[in-house]
Amino acid sequence: MRNLHLFWCGYTKNVEDLQQNSGSRPPGPALRLVAAALIVRGDQVLICQRRADQPMALQWEFPGGKIEAGETAEQALARELDEELGIHATIGPKVTHIRHNYRHGGAVDLQFFAVREFSGELENRIFTQLRWTRLEDLPEYDFLAADRGLIRDLASGKLL
Image (cartoon, rainbow, N blue to C red; front, side, top):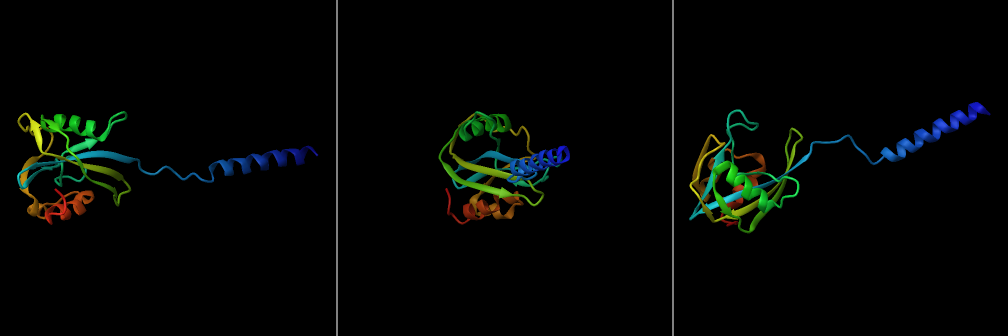
C-alpha cells in the first residue's frame, strides 16, 4: 500500500506540473516597443544612418527609440528626439503602427508619428549621418526591414 501511495503522489504531482505548464512555451525574444518620428520639412523627411558598430549596421531608419515603462509613445519619442538630435519636438498625430518579426527572432512594435515642428538646431549625437530626403527618393536607401513597407507608402504618397 505504501508503494501505491508513493506512486500515486508522484503521478499526481507530475500531472499537476504538466497541467500548469501545458500552455507555456519557452520564452521567445522580447517584443521591443518603439516610437519613431517622421520629421517633415516641406516634401522632405529626416532619415538617419545607423553606426557601423550597431546591429543592422549602416542601414537607414527614422529617429526614435524604445518606449520605457511608464511612458506613452509620445513621451518616449519626445525624450528620444532630445537625446538623439538635441531638439524639442511637437509630436503630431500617429501616422502608422507596424509590428515586425525579424528573421533572427527579434520582434519590434513600431509607432510612427508626424513631427512638423521642433525647436533647437538638429545635432547628430548618435548616427553616422543625418539626411533630409524627398519622400519619393526614400526607396533608394537601405532601410531596416521593419521600415520597408512604410517607405513604399511614403514614397507613393499614401501617407503624410
